[in-house]
Figure 1 (tube, rainbow, N blue to C red):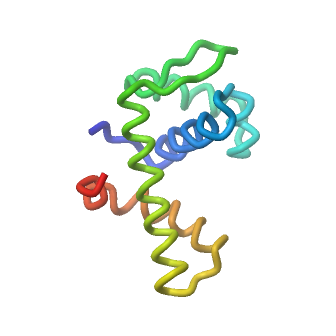
Figure 2: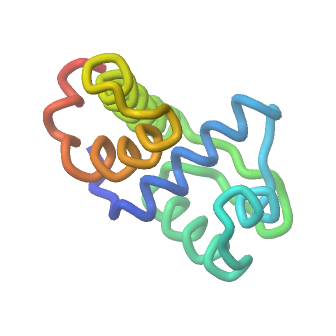
Figure 3: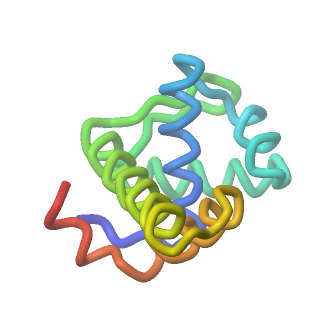
Amino acid sequence: MVELSPTMEDYLKEVYLTVCDKGGVKPGDLSIRLNVSASSVTGALHLLADEGLIEYVPYGSISLTDAGMRLARELYYRHSMVTRFLVDVLGVEIETARESACRLAAHHFSGYFATFC
């Protein structure tokens, strides 16, 4: 599995969620959804493309490769499982759980959850 920084995992997950939600994604969409600059998005997209996780042409739509889709699904799965645990077991409010799950699931439990995907 490709080792990504927590920030790159966030970008990949957001590409996945936007593609699933809207059928496609452009760099400007990610900039708005992640509340980051266009130049940050462009740099992240180049890194993800270099890793073979996305197909990206400047000013065009972004698509996930098969490897990118598998990894993005794993990231989303981990995030969802940690969110459910925080809400269902610990009684954390949903919005707080989502924010915490983002930090925990993708960034601290990567090896553990990979066995369940």
